[in-house]
Length: 160
Image (cartoon, rainbow, N blue to C red; front, side):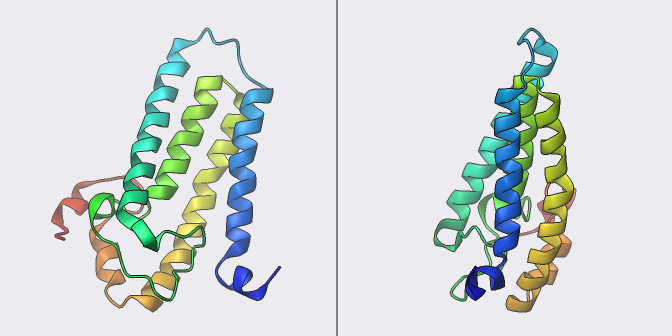
């Protein structure tokens, strides 16, 4: 692996890809009997919420988007769009969609893999935020004003 790959947080990207692939493959390989609407409906809602957060994050980031947790040298701090509500909407997207996917397929192994994404993204976000504070002096204010993954009252105080 190249030094720039590792320097930008490439191992995080590999681990994330493995976990996401595990959710998809385990769901298809070890699915339920498709009779429990009590799992399918909330799963579909979570999957759709994941889609909304993902699309919102991609649109707001525009050319700032990168798979790596370390910001690019030419990036700027994005606080508009869904980033006014949560600091990591793309991570929220993957977590919600993965949990939803596992529930839709009624796959307990996939659900276990999806649940592992939660502490994984919490750790990845903490690492990414250290890099963001180094690059953007006003990130600490943004961090205090906007929740990490789930929108809340704090986000209403941020302007711009």
